Amino acid sequence: MQRPKEKDPLSLAALIGANLIPFVGVFFFRWDISFIVLLYWLENLIVGFYNILKMATVKMTDTAANLHKLLVIPFFCIHYGGFCAIHGVFLTVFFKIGTESSPFAGSSDWWGPLIFLQLLFSVIAKLWASRPPEMIWAVLGLFVSHGISFVENYLLSGEYKKKDLQKLMHQPYQRIVVMHITILAGGIFVMKLNSPLPLMIILIILKIFFDLYLHKKSHNPKQKAKPTGKKDSGPTREEMPG
Image (tube, rainbow, N blue to C red):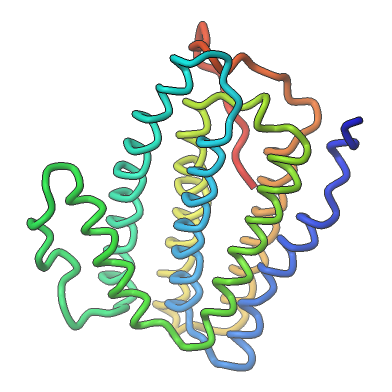
């Protein structure tokens, strides 16, 4: 018997706990706004990783639909990877993170569209090398938080039976566009004011509330199951992921 979907205390607690970690960086390690924005950019990669797992495990109704995953998942990896890479380049420009060399250096070696993945790896290496050492614990916290949500809400609660593959592919973009335009705009504003502590705290709190909103909206128990083996008759608005 399936448990009530509205009760997910473990994933909710993990979400809140992981989002509180930046406060430790600000108060005890003197992180500035560039490190906060960097952490939230790294979270995009974590969201993309778990979205790949969601697409791989979504329940399909026939063999042809399962074979369709073999095209959709690689396309998502390349497209989302390039999207995150360009987003990361903005961090190097606006927040002066890892500005010693260009992330585009050597980006013409990989074949065809794989160049976007090469650019992503280059940007990851560049930004990761510029992180404060203690940030690894914040990244691990976010990774575990999203992992708990994936297991508890997506697998154990049976969301993988209801989700549509095409809509899963678009969900992370919605999250980035809504959340990170706000974070980038707020981050640039804070940086222009020499990273005042109160505004950084407000930015972190806003991100926590926004994550909670997306979490509840994404795992709404009133979501209707949708067929996964065939295309929808028309576009509908999909809930954002938590």
